[in-house]
Length: 354
Image 1 (spheres, rainbow, N blue to C red):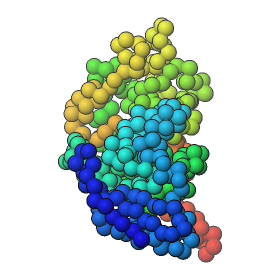
Image 2: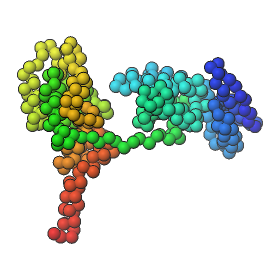
Image 3: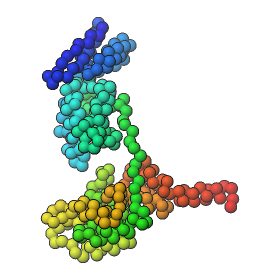
Image 4: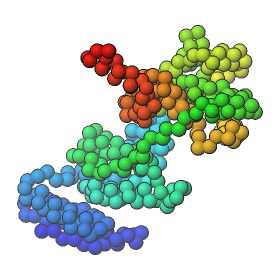
């Protein structure tokens, strides 16, 4: 039989404590914030016990979600330095919200409830909501912690995240410079007080490199003879090559003649210890060029768009941009209509004749 007890926590929150007792079986306990969830869990658990289906392990009842998060941050995150700061932030949000629950009590329904709260959190700067992409990143951090707890620590039999639906992400942004905008923006960058704004913008446009991939370059990673830049630290964790050609290669050769002594950075800041910050010069250049709704990252989109319009396949674009799958570059597919049409025309000519 199941019993439900209403309790109030130290911080004033109301929870419903459920106990399921059946003769010959261990007692099962869980806590919920909603009475309907408590009743649903009690009914499901009673049925599972009577039918001989597996229920929560002792370890899952003994460990809390907060314990799992603390161990993950201590033991796992140090091996992921690139994501450590954001993942710690995301995981600590979950710990604050539901860290007091045991792993046996953190049901998909409880996580889904706080997923929705996360999306509407008033602490978010923009309009009091978090974007679907941000919510997905918070969920991904928790999901990986659960995966480790299941596979390596044996604290659970399965992750509840498998039953929690992710919010749908909006379509990827595709904003690229038109043939009229491009010369205006490059001219404005060339006029900038920043000595590196023009060359870094040209590199972003011609190679598709991300902002910090370009600004954080060291001379030992630049091979002007072969015309390549080697990126050792990338977003997806894999080494990537950026080809240097044409105007970008010429600018880099000229720039290499004025290297700063005892500084390996290609684009150093004032103290020669950190890369230059081009945010303010960039914003000023956009205003001078009268270009709106355009971000630095859109230079990367522009590079991909130009590649698509000049006949590059999605696989080639993905390789240049450093994407592991074609999903991320499908947003550029509509720009390669002419290339696609030629492929279909060649196929038709071969099977049907000229």
